[in-house]
Amino acid sequence: QNCASCHGMNLEGLSGPPLAGDVFKNDVEFNKITASQLFGFITTQMPYDRPGRLTKEQYELIFTYILYRNHYPSGSTPFSSSALEKVKLLPFPKVDDKQTGQNGR
Image 1: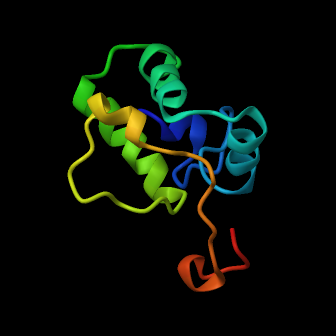
Image 2 (image 1 turned 180 degrees about the vertical axis):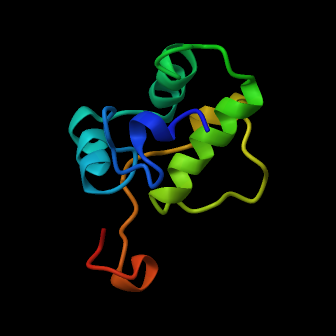
């Protein structure tokens, strides 16, 4: 609802960058992006036309959806932004063909 017009229905990227897949993986790895940095950017800069206007819960759901779409494992408790230091974006999860239904993407 708030992301697809720029990032695509499958987070493949349109006018905004991809938030899932190889391009996102390469960006996270190259820039060594932390969970706190990613969440902070999302909460202060997104959505592009209304930055910072969503609720804390909406931002948390968006963040966890990005993690889910990139095959990060789920934790044993619901995500809360107060626990960002426990979320590690690196190493990026390895994805096999069985998880994606394609060639590792």
